[in-house]
Length: 171
Image 1: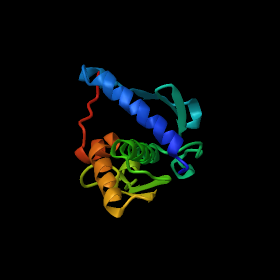
Image 2: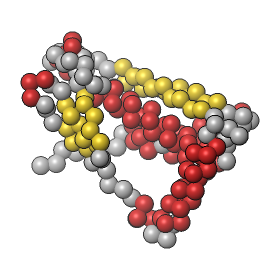
Image 3: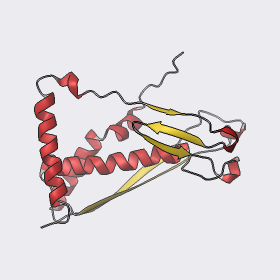
């Protein structure tokens, strides 16, 4: 018995239930998500509320922060890593491709010059974002590649970043 068998069986049951719930009325599967953040006084730290959870975001000391939590760009990369791992779990269940472990490493770079007021050609953003998925599986290389392709096609955070979803400021 593989280490994740119990969890993957439970996950598969939940996925089947969600499909049964949402198939007759697809709009019931649309979930509205929200997050908020504010400045915590003179510390510069930013408690950030995401769903029912709060995570403190902060700048590095070189940007007048205290390193009390990840930076906002690190949180974005972390969200991508977490969503990729979860999507591997989901696709493992849907495709019936077993694995014992998955770990995703995400990296990117950002020119901090524009953030501190230096001139910049173009727009300030995370660039050169890439990831490596470390998967331990007894499945054939073809099945593992099929799972990689399914993850690329269905990971919501990955596809949001790749497709550049519009973001607008509301009044």
